[in-house]
Structure formats: structure tokens, C-alpha cells
Length: 383
Image (cartoon, rainbow, N blue to C red; front, side):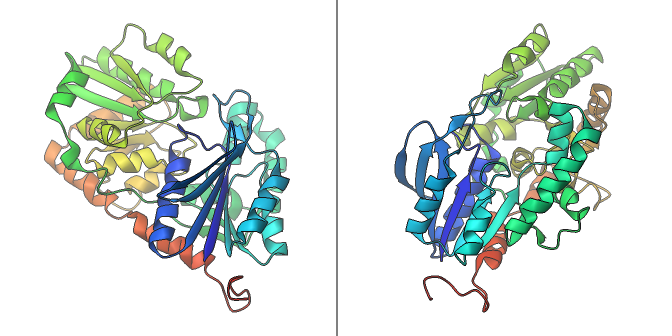
């Protein structure tokens, strides 16, 4: 098959979306398929990568996003797709690229759209008017689902806003984790010592520094634990539009900002060095960083309202690999202390075993089962 994936909000620091595109693309290539990625950037670029051919086209910077770009010239994308002649199309966007579902149907191309975020939660966070936004969000989601063969949600949490509309073409496909790149063997005592300083408990927050991620709660949790007499150090790995305000909040407290970590091996070592990774974002629809932490042998404390509870197995096991907490720093501090009460070898082993249930190979195979031609819609190459 020829598989095309078009995305907005893709960039050098786009974290989970970028990782997902790369890992799926690599898996498709290994399975013998051709892959094209079309993403926004500053200038036109064409590059062969280990996950397929990547074409970058000029996109417009979205105000307040910290530099993220979106594709506005969708006609150009359609022309590129027509030239590539894909058998299947993946779209990672619910804004400017939704008409590509119509293009796919008109050209007998299988299509899926990923639900990487919850529009309901984002509208409530940024517009702060849930009763005013629920109706247009539902209208938009229903329209989106009609334009594609499948809507792919990575968790039950991400699926909820489509389930309440009775969407029939909704499919849940959990994401995966690189179990070799993120591994307990990445633990480095010298790195841990340097990160700890004069503390004895290392907390880690890994992710984009933007309002919906609630990084402020991680900072406040570290402050609360220090107030309780815990000798903690919080390391924040990531960058984004909220960094300046977060640094002001953390001033004088045991918090270190290391910025965006480009080197994946270095990031794996930081995650493996931690005692607990914090994932306080209440809108997380999967949170790859949390799964990467588990693969590194580090338990996670997350917002009880997010999808991370599913990743941790909170509702499946009497001994989840971490904990969830109400959305306040006192509850997060309680949850951290609860996790720290479990012997280190036991919690590290449990975290790793949970992550091993999410190999990328499983995600790739589930996606290919959606994208493969059906008798009613044969491959364009075979046609």
C-alpha cells in the first residue's frame, strides 16, 4: 500500500504527535509499504527519513501556540496527494485539514482521522464557556466523523465525545512505546545525583509547557512536598509558551528547568532516574511521556480526570503502576507519597511490566487492519 499521513502542529518540539507519526511510518515501511508525510513548516522541504518521505510545506504560525504552524493551503496538499496516489490516508488534525476526508472518499482512498485531543476540554480551558461551546463542538465532531472512514481514538477517554454522539465508525487504537529506547537499564546513578542536588527524591515532569498541560500543578506539588518536609527536586523537561510564568512560580523552590530535550537517549536517562513522573494535565488523551516513563521503570502520578488512568491500569488492577489524584497540589502530593511508600524494586518492575503491554508493533498492526483495502474498495494500485 501507499500510505499518506498529513498533520498540523508538527514540529521539532511537538512531542507525542511527532513520535506517533514517526513510529507508525517506520512500522509501515518495515511491513513493506510506501509512506508519505506532509507537515507544516517555515519553508518547503523534501526529505527521505527512516519513517518515509517527508514533505514540509509553508504553514501559518498559530497565535499563542508557541510557534506551532498549521497548513492553510489545503489545495496544495490535495495536489501532492493526487501525485502520490495513496491507497490510504491518515490525518492528524481536526481543524484546517478535515476536508481531506472528502478528497479521500472522492478518490476511493481509505481514510482515518486521529483524535489527538478533546475539543470539549480544550474549549472549556481556553474559552471558559462550556455551555456555549458544547453544541458547536458536537456539531463539528459529528461532521468530522462523517468525512472519514474511521475516527481513531487512543483511549476510552478520547473516545467519549464521539461515543455520546453515537458515532459508528469510531475505533480505539492505543499508542505504543519504544521498549528498547525507554528501558530501566537507562538508569544512571551519576545523572540522578547531579539532578537531585541536595534532595533525596527526584520528581520529573516531561512535556510541553502550555496551559492545558497544567505544569503549574507539578511545580505546586513539589512546593507542597517540600513544605511537608520532603527533600524533593522537580526536574521539568520541555519548553513552551508558559515557561516564563512557570519559572516565576518556581523561583526559590526546588525546581529545575532543563528545557526541551532533543536527544531521545538523554530523555530516557532522565525518566529512568526519577522516582515519580508527574502527568497533571486533566485533558491528556493518552500521554506518551507517561508510557515512556513506565517503560523506563518509573511510576506515574496523573490527574484522575485524564486518560492516563487507563495507561496506568487504575481501573483494571488493585495495584496500579502509580496513582491518580484530584486536580490540586495537596492531592498530588498525597499520591506521590503513596507511590513512594512502595518499595523501589517492586514499583520499578510493575511499571516496566505495564509498559510491555503497549508495543508499537501492536499499534502498527491495528492501524494496518483499518487501512488495508476491502473487497468493496480495492487498492488503487491493483485497480
